Figure 1 (cartoon, rainbow, N blue to C red):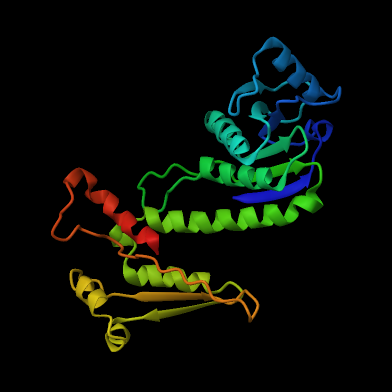
Figure 2: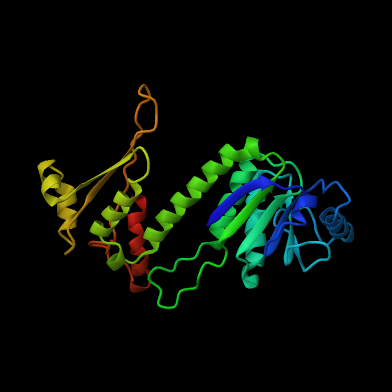
Length: 278
């Protein structure tokens, strides 16, 4: 997913070329006499658009607006949870429209947390797993422009949100793979690919190195699989020298059959998610 941040008021948003335009409307409504502000005022006056976050209406090819489809979605007081609810509802409403590029604009001032919530919600609502599907449903939405009133001030929050989205989707992609497409060796290679990023290092230990460290419990568990174990260490050197390191230890069993407590057949497939801790 390609995200962009730019200055977009309602008047400018009306000329933004996109398959769909999502307008996040606060409880205070929208000022101005431009086409979108007029559309919002009419929707609120008629009672078709309330203030409850997630309440939305859709217009197809409205006059004077460049986007093919316009979704007005209420965000209430505009806090992050409300924005997330509104964006999820709006993107869901566009599922049948096969939109490839959308513009998402705040009808009022946007806070950093609200922008972060919008980025995360767009990514979550449009994510589709396709790697091992024989007839994959492609991810239609490929680009999202976030329109705000002061992009320079909001760019740090936006950049962090986009980075988090990419990390979350990387984890989703590997977490969704079945065990035979996510072996310990393959997961180690995925970790090595992350280590190509700045200030990241990856170390992968095999059975001999693990035995030398006296990690008997880990070795014992790994004997239940024909796949050789891998112990993965990722190091990110991003803080100042005086800052104490933060260590996260994750359970990375790529498929857990349940040991002495076998799972019912209907739930066995979900055991692939045991890798998600790592």
